[in-house]
Image (cartoon, rainbow, N blue to C red; front, side, top):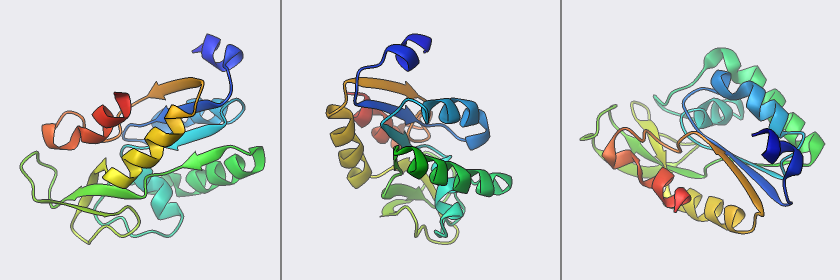
Length: 159
């Protein structure tokens, strides 16, 4: 990672996924100094979306990190880093591979439903940014990769 942070060709895109902002905060803060684009996916998406006033239904959210998410959004703007969040997601009515699913706007997840993967518009948007990048650093999945029905976002970005 040191080589990527100090010898990266521009444009440099970092893809951060996974469940919790708290697990990635130091990495995200360091990347703000180097990256041109910062893509946020996975469960931590919903902490950012809620911090911006979105309805996340029953999606994972670190309530105690909402101010931190707002600070990171502000810091990205100040540093000229394009912070990209999903625009849509695959929502499920329960945390189960066999759950009923539907694609929803990431900031309008129905009550009782939870976002478990990024949706098709987000995949397209993220792939366009990644394709235009010279350096890519990836850390974490875009969805609940352990469940087959919520692997598409991660697999589509990786290929």
